[in-house]
Image 1 (spheres, one colour):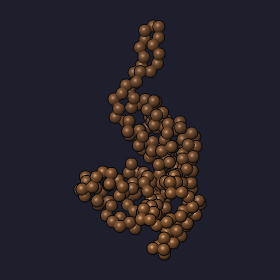
Image 2 (image 1 turned 180 degrees about the horizontal axis):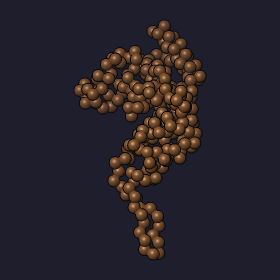
Image 3 (image 1 turned 180 degrees about the vertical axis):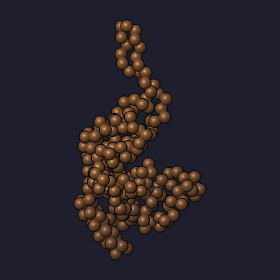
Image 4 (image 1 turned 120 degrees about the horizontal axis):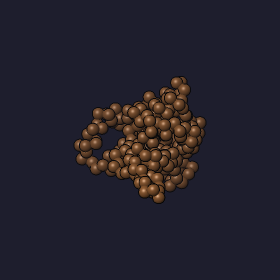
Length: 232
């Protein structure tokens, strides 16, 4: 056990050092900005609500009515905390490229927490209650997200009102933010944890898990798997 814990310490030290040097690049920031915004908009896209805009004039002219799902209000509400949502991500250092950023607990952290629960003393140099705080990488991505959104807000608005037939990551990231040589992360797709027991079977078993074929509850199934942002 001592050897195993020491090995984990060495691995975590390597990961920590790597994280300090591996801040998110522009492609990754744009990718997850668009993922989160499209997700936020998808949650309100079927609303039947109708908004009344403008003021009632002395002439008796009525206020103009517009559909919420095509309104500026919907976009404003979606953008309000969009970069804040980036803080829900964790660094999964065992994954390549942009796939290292995903919601849920990484394999490494899950292993360490499991050791703690078994009574093994694990010292990462910070209190246990801070283990789930956003990492340096994730915090940096949030800041870059805010800067990018401020710079390209008009582009996002143009997409929302005139180009929703295109995916936002194509319209924003490919056409406005990134050079051709910087777009590699946009093609990275999640295919399951490499090296995790049963990882090669993840894709085949997804439908069974969603249907509860293994008899587990939804909460239990969520605890067993993590998702790349493209699956959200």
